[in-house]
Image (cartoon, rainbow, N blue to C red; front, top):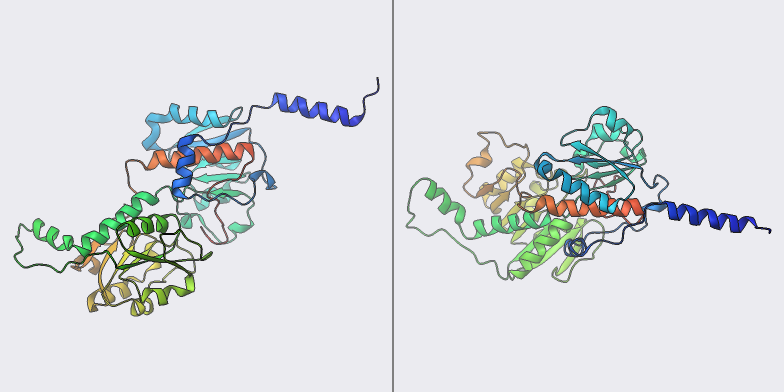
Length: 375
């Protein structure tokens, strides 16, 4: 019997398919709902279209110290979505240089040294959101796929923004200071109602969108800027491009900085910007400290251009003892803790595990970092 080469080829493909581990189905219901609620973005193309992709034989996975007690559960959940793939668990912290040099797929924390020295790297899943500390000149020449956990910390950071805004508008910072001194204040401190006020979000990404949703629910008018487009959810009245920030600032009763740190955003909030803001507005910063010129912020707070500020990030950071910002009565400062939450790791882990499932199956990844943009 004659068997043509196409029949042989088809039989070979069927044999390979039968031998390969079964591909896992799409995300489970909990993960699907999380993707939807956080509005996570898929890459436009499946990762299998990338020239650096191949189905991994081995994945190095960092188990953070805070999750060490759940080590076996996390590994079991990773195995469920990556059948047939060898998982190499690593203790929290920076992996051994020898591991870095050989790893093709690494789930963990990015750093400049890690990316530079990972000579075989194909995919890096960063456990955190911000990646500015992992960027270096020439990173765009390194061929690898880079994803992060952006949006996973957006809910607690957005709540932190609202808490700071409420503290300042209701004068709680004044009364808390008096409480710490054991004083009952007979005089009334000025207070504001936020319903009907305008809130401007600089950076309508994951954090900015979560802030916008909460502010809108409280009756505020929400406007925003973003770098990529004018698209936004229905609860944002107007979305402008980044160059429109000064014009929109003139309308704002509250300005929220939710921008990543890039060359374009470094020092963006300076004296010129504060001169354009509606006089007496509040400034709340949960982006990166270096996007604000601290001396100019202090001057605006002292002369009334700003009535108050809520700062979870500062420049420098940590803010040194004796710095003038500590002494200003209209400033609330927290030490870069806005992302802290009792639910953060589990939410982030769902995204990490889902990206592992997608990578193994060659699907569209979530939260792909554009190294040219820096986020």
